[in-house]
Image (cartoon, rainbow, N blue to C red; front, side, top):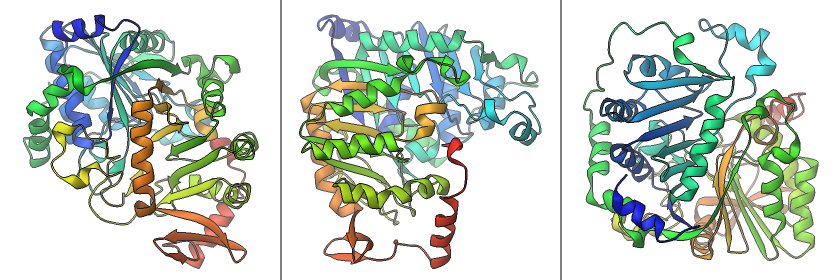
Length: 465
């Protein structure tokens, strides 16, 4: 990275420069840009890596960095990155490892029968760290649906670009995963590539990504101090040993996260793509309400949820949470322009509407975040569900910044009534509030779908989540 960036960080010892990245194209552009700036090392860790334009483009940039002498290490979860495995194997200069890999490489489906318990535990972390001075972490995987504003299934998501000492902590955490025995070199798993991988064709989507990365506005995001908010940032991370199922609870990320939520004295705003309460987490949320804390939860509706089983396990909790005073919001999931959190840096704002929480309804909510008392902000990979707590490894930042927390809180308050349904009890049943009218039964569902949901929610599948 540049000497100017190092000087910028050294002038603020103990602090981290932070920017929130809710705009998809900008989030990919920043990744491409810091990879191009790398001089010594790039550490990349992801749960899902698609074989699509965004996936190919970032791999091309990593290979280009390796060709100029940068040490590039790529740690991919074997479950979510199987489609890109052959791409990584064909690129020279990259050190690639697969986390918790399946023993039978092809066909893979028998692994689910004979090795399910082990393979059900996944590395859900998402990070890209350059020269131990700049890092991007958050909710996004690598794929067009996370970055392309024109993608049919664009997900509303949130990342953090951070510069300073915290990047070194993320790099050290990456090293723990890289050295863990479950991180297996790809060369032991994949057949040698027959030939070098040809660059992805210069299609319209690729041109758009490259244009965003080369835009002076994107360059300014990394270089200019006024675009960063300087704050105290704590990295929260599960140890890689979590996948063994024998890791002591006090070493896990969850207790720290729940403690941060329990600090709330006035308000907790929770955003979770997958929201599946347990008796303990229900007690936490309801206990906050009893103490006078306003608790708002935004999650996916059935229409916007991409995992029906998650919705089936969430749905039975709604009535009890509402009765306790928790305010529930569900994404409407209707068609329209793609979405953002309304936090696009000023240089990237092209129209007034971009400053709102959602420009229009999303196909899917994918963000994982919460705000307490307009001061503490969490952004990371962890959903508010048992799978994230018990099975997957996770990573996130807890940011002490009234500026950023209030910015996101205001965006949520402005946008939620327009782009999410608020749930309430009405006539002994649930109702979904849209503008000034109520919708019953559950929006976008048929009686058959509701019956199927009821049945799924009562199957003995809780261990999956």
